[in-house]
Image 1: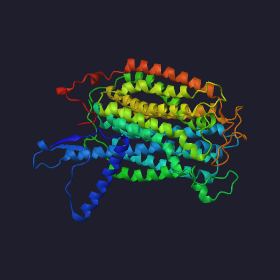
Image 2 (image 1 turned 60 degrees about the vertical axis):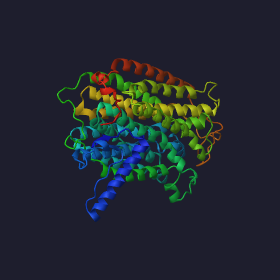
Image 3 (image 1 turned 90 degrees about the vertical axis):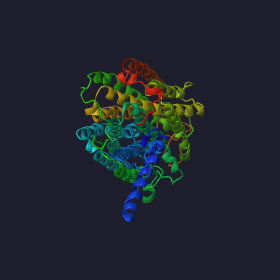
Image 4 (image 1 turned 135 degrees about the horizontal axis):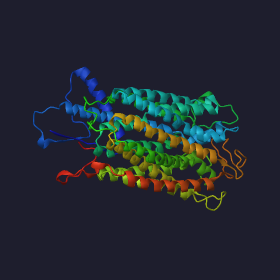
Length: 538
């Protein structure tokens, strides 16, 4: 019997659904065995069996079981990573008006800090978790479990923010949730350890695309709860309304999602080791190349800059839509802010998957790494108010900018982390993979923290003089926004500066690829018998 492990999967969402199916099937099988005795194992989804070559009496061996365990573990990591990424932006549709509602009285400029605080603590937890796992790969499961519990606690606190009725409660909730999300770097480290260079474009690409999709579709979680009774700024809200309202429902949603996925993860995930066949055997005889530090010196600052440009834009989408384009005047209009971003993320994910996984283009992540920052630049250029700070540009420009930014985010993060992971393999960093992936996560989280912080400090929704919550521009009514007199303050100098900054990053990426683009011997591996090398097939 010839087993082909099909990691060429339908896509991130399909992978997540298939992972859940594996978990449910396993639970049913165990329950049936308890009642009726051992049950013969059927062929697993995602495994193609060549029956013409199958000996009649052959039974599944240890390799089959190891392959199934490895596949289920990958699904478990994919699911948990998807939920952590969803958590980051699930409140994005409502958090900025929620901040103006609860954080008034001189704290308006702290919105960027509050939104980005999620990544501030992720910068702290990612390297700690990486060091914890590098010392013993058997700690992967424990690290993921601890992270999920911490993240759930942060979301639960966020759900009570309106009841607590202090701006700092939102800040603390985001800080705690971010601590748990540091486990996202562990997922990338896990995929790096259990895949070959050929498999990694598909496997790590799917892992990162699933998170990019989650981050861009996360704001639509708020859309599910539009129409709930609004909070009254003057008080008199019932306790039930303060706990369950449009602002806090994303906290409840992500908390319950983490709880469900946490249970599936406990069942599906197996710690990797060479004994169970999960860890790919590498050449342990070669020492880590000193070239890796030169690569870090050039690549990580550029990666930080691109992330900063992305999240400075995304965190300010509501301010741009309400303050400059005036397409939001009511709570139910908030879907307009993020629908373009979600559509672009889906389109970018399809484009990346089609060219790198389905078409089997080897090491195609390098092309996307060069192209994706161009989409980010286009988003900034499309939203500059060229006719003056008080001009209201056509709404089509806003939607177009959101779409191209969504494409840029999906393709950039998938290609960047895959490129970084393959360079670690090229430089023989096997003993420090989790630590170095943690370093990459620090830089990523730092950019997601810095972008909103800078954008929130420089720009704000206000009148043309920079005053907030005036009669012609305010968000004090829970579901009605007064935006007729609003602008996005400092839009022209800030957006112009960010466009120029992004152009310099595009040039830097091109130079880095010229200097570090080769994977060495992996680039010159010959294909035997003219067979197409399909990513992820064993």
